[in-house]
Amino acid sequence: MEQAIAFRPAETVSSPDQANLGPATRLLFVGPAEAVPDYARAGARLVAALAPADAAAHIRAMIAVDIVWLADADAIDEPSLADIAAAVIERDCRLVCETGLAALDRVAAAIPPAVRAEWLVEADAADRLVALAAASPGAALAVHDVARDEAMERIDRLQEEVARISRLLGDLAGQRGLAGGPGGLAMPPSDDPGRAVSLRSPGRDYAAAPRSFVPEDRATDRQRAKAVRRLLRQRRVREQYFPADLFADPAWDMLLDLYAARLERRPVSVSSLCIAAAVPATTALRWIKTMTDAGLFVREADPNDGRRIFIALADGAADAMTRYFEALEE
Image (cartoon, rainbow, N blue to C red; front, side):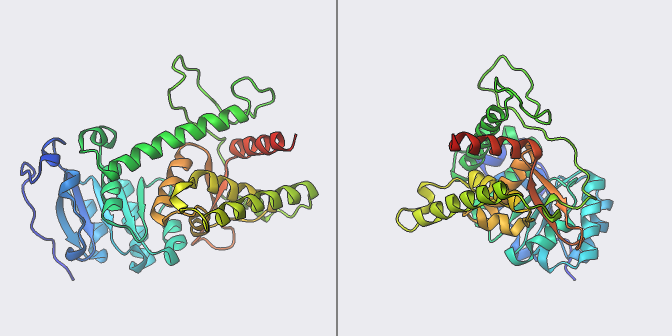
């Protein structure tokens, strides 16, 4: 069993970046000490590295902790993982969770939606830095203070793209002049047309079976689902002739995949949606989190297996997608 490792006092500064961030973020690492990420660059301070069995009790006993980092979460047994998640919620701190793609669905189901989590799958150093920056308290301010490297640019691009998609789907759903928009998508008025807005879907009862399990024969839906799948295949074929990152658009790929799945009455797991995004799993998970926070995606429980969750389109986003494809068919 590993012991807590030594750490520097909070006032110690090891880099110019850290000096600009003010008080260091307190990081508790769960896993082998040799796997600890480059926390100093993100202005964090390592307070301990522990074995998973000791983590929950240590979190509850700490005076203060900002981030709990789980390395190899797929290797943690389910009771310990659930206890750690509960301790994170009790202490109101954030979680960075590393796991493999094969175990992603099981681990994601074990982490409640109330946990503010950043996900990493086969991550590189830049991904880890982004996760630390995003999980740190006051992350929005830190993004502008840290040197403008590739990792920080990723966060900016993500925020800008989600804001763009939110505005687009709001337009399609009829919130800015189109009649018949769904009541579930609420766009607050704003004098600033460039201000990012969020889509909010009505609350859902996660105890109910996902709509994907409701048998219903609709020829129109089947035909449209085929058209959406054909569009997705065309996007993948394009990557055989041009660099994939030239046209990378994970948000749109996931919207298309979830819309087709809704028409097919088929559930979509987290790992399956990551694959559909056609980008590294860590990037896809960050998109899923952001789109869920924006009210475009919702989590649905698997009625047959409590260890798995599904991702689906929010009702308002699905209505906007329907209007989009109806417009294309005119």
